[in-house]
Image (cartoon, rainbow, N blue to C red):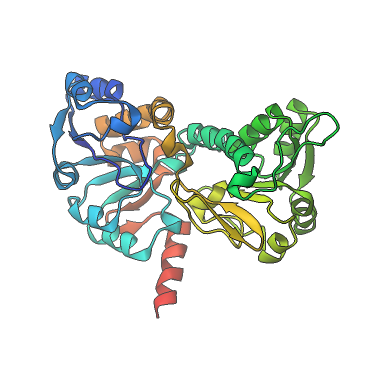
Length: 367
């Protein structure tokens, strides 16, 4: 089977679909691996390392996409890139299709491309094993970036996260007690901030409270969200509903009532964001001011710690990639429910209810 690794084209996306170590494993099973020239440079992997691992280097994106039986991406492809793919091939990546544009879904369905979303691989206990490492990285990054954004030179309030004797620390409010929220909480605590975590799941709050007794925990209701955002210096949106657009939990009125020059970090922006005033930004221009509040809404936060992120991703994803490469997607779907859970489109049809709903809503909006 031909597995192809193209160079990521989205701004500040330095991660790569496989490391040389993973390529070596696949070639030992007699799969052909094609790697686009310089695709691994951002993560510190040279063409020579890929060649030594058994890959063949190709020198155009069109060739990489066109050769692929299985295309191994990180970020969702552009529409022009999807057009290069062979009909009935397999696309694997962090696709976030429920928040995608309708015309991209059209191409997937028309060309009968199987779209496999790493972020939706779900084990029997409900955990998301391949998304987990990126969630850990995103949560840790959220706290360290927030500390910088609170500085005056970034437009913040001029607050030191941990305060000093006689001056209180920053108030950090984390919405969502999952992996992102847990790691953000740990990092905020390590910096000396005072932390509040809100979630609808009492078990998640209990887990955080057991580990971090000094954290304030609250059930996520509209009233509690309004109260917590009102005293926050930093708000981190860390809500994930697998395979669905993130719900809007923080309204414009809540943002307007926040302290002037406080910070919103909407880590859920990959799934559309949980803040009504959020819109995607980039690592080059990461922030904007709206309603007097500094917003940070970069979708691919782990993309700038590419080496760590790529190694962590490969550790988690390799068993699933190997199974699909060895068995083919049809057999893998039948035998492994975790793989089946991540297939969004297949044989020209949508297999995911939330994707179908998003597709219909987009279609209605065009009429």
